Length: 328
Image 1 (cartoon, rainbow, N blue to C red):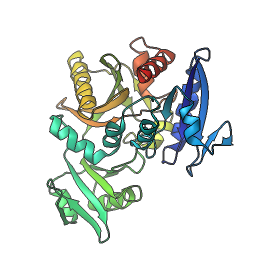
Image 2: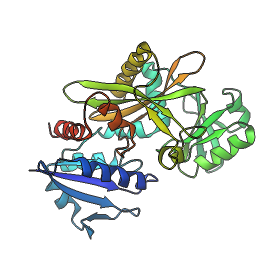
Image 3: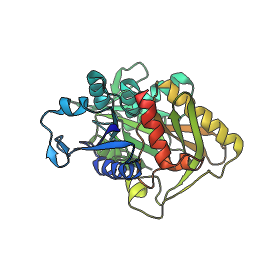
């Protein structure tokens, strides 16, 4: 049997989502194929296996054949645990150190996508410093922070996001100067780097990537949010939010999104899996990339497994493929 470590929980704001994802993964693993070791990290960073605290973490991890880090956000999706597993020479599912760290940081993802020529929303990079805030220009110089420097470049509505956060934690929509200032202050609670992005009036669509002998893109699914945008609550707490697979868009648009998803994955040096999110602008049908998730959710309502189920790959088969690819 394959000794598989499923690591979940963690210190990030997405701890509870990780627990839900791991529960779903463990339920769908073939128990005759895998000897499953459940490894839980609590919110304070303590590691446990079967409710017993782990005191020799290196020994525990080195005993495993492969690890599935079902961790979202900081400490799990940002390259840190990937780096530790690389040092220990333990195979693991998903993207490597570089792709994980770049994919987690929204500002630097923007910079890479810009270089790759992938269409995206206009943005302003704001940084919190000892004097308050500064605007970082395209040459990484700090400029004096003034709201009108943002409003001269972007139109309302805008979206304000912590650069390093997931599941829409800390994300706010701003429709005026007062809301913009409050949204920046809110985002600064989660990260010193803040992304202010031009709002796009568009449909939210997603494409899943599976990387093995070749990079496979799923079909495209659409998010029908119950709220104004796909917030944390809309994702996990409001049952009226739903997904439509395949998305009700043209075949040509689906193919363009699939091609852009693969391009985005390659641009950050992705491996294993990712979910790439886009907007289809209403009125123009222009496609803009939103972000890439290098360790997407695996809950029973998550888009990543549902998108592959729609093209004939069951949840259990998908897990097998991801684990086999990691071991290769």
